[in-house]
Amino acid sequence: MNLRTIARYGVRTVPGDEAEIVAAFRRGEAVEGPAVAEFERRFAAYHDAEHAVAASFGRMAFYYILRALDLSAGSEIIFPALTFWVVPEMARRAGLRPVFVDVDPTTFNLDPSKIEAAITERTRAVVPTHLYGQPCEMSEVMRVAEKHGLVVIEDCAQAAGARYRGKPVGTFGAASFFSFQMLKGINTYGGGMALTGDARLAARVREQAEAEPLQPTGDLIKRFLTGYASRVGVSPRGFTFWGFPLQAVASLFGHYDLSRYVWEKIRPLDPFPRTYRQRYSNAQAVLGLRGLARLDEFNSRSREHAARYTRGLSDCRSVRTPRVLPRVEHVYYQYCIYASDPALASRRAIRRGVDFETTHVDVCSALPLFEEFAAPCPGAVATEKALQLPVYSRLRPTDVERVLRVVREVTGDLAPLGERDATGHASFKETLHAG
Ligand SMILES: *Cc1c(COP(=O)(O)O)cnc(C)c1O
Image 1 (cartoon, rainbow, N blue to C red):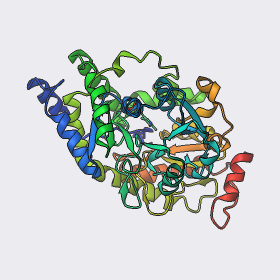
Image 2: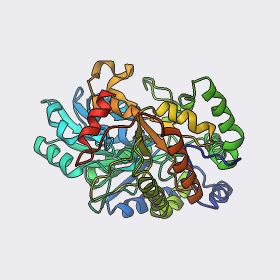
Image 3: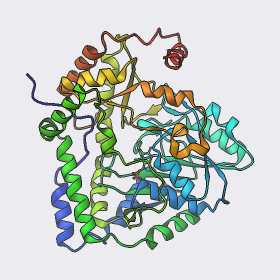
Image 4: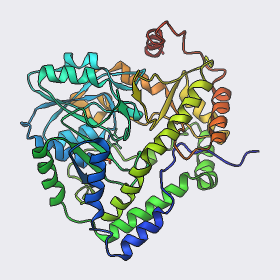
């Protein structure tokens, strides 16, 4: 029996991170210090962009950008229907009206052909989200935005280091934002960054970020301690001894989905929780510099795992592997396959020691939180048939082979997803919509 279990997520850390955190505290540079400016400078340089401004959260970087743009109250801002609920909620907090546009279920990203129909005389901005690490079809998004004079703000929270036609995401629109939460491409146990080429916009974002109070030392210590505990929880050993038994038992009762205890509760963010209104700390920036230096290496490891999955499942009729646009570099924050019964597949998988999450991103167009902005978005609803395979950079090649075996075992007898057509997709969409 294989005692090693495989958690759904892995946390990116660089060996020696803990010692660097302790050293920052010892120097008296945990809260404030020179690393923040250095991280901003290197982050901008990595993207060949002019300005980067650090923030307490990716969502706060987005909020500062919206405020800096000074859009009139009630302006409309277009979001993909499938995104993290926090992002449209921040737009609402900034006095704007979210408008949800459907996604293409084969890429999980905003369908650029559907943007135009949602534009009104009050539309001012559009937020392409590079979901799961795959860049949106940016040439199309930019064409529509330019035609209608819309500001483009890219949500790069899941896609640091991804490229579209050779250019890094975050450098197409007027501004973009990134997240450094524990599970994201660069992990600093929370934090975010705004990126822009516009000096005036950058100055207005910075003014807001630097007006926030410093993080209390106690908060910072708590941040690193809970971060450490969660990281151990998803490590092979930690997961084997607590996460796995908990989920295996839950799977017997059919209510296997423990993720709702992990993710932030969906709720109005009025007022902002206290931790939102803080400055990014120096100790976090120290980790950011280290993570940024390894970003491409970590991303290429996830990409290799993904390539192995795609090859290994090419003949598997019970699942559909993700579609990748030509000339993009996907960074695989998630590798999502489709199966006709993802919940059953994940219940079976956890009993084999492998943890597959069913989708956790929100169909925002159907959330009670956004009831007044509800819109029919069948593409986003169709993504509820997706199943996330672990693809994080820490996985070993033997883990990847095991995941492949388990996918076959747990989906083999499920209803097939329908034939591929010549382009591989039209008939697939129908199957999803019908299913
Ligand atoms: C993580 C995430 C964010 C927000 O990042 P925070 O740093 O948690 O505020 C925004 N958009 C998407 C798609 C994300 O996954």
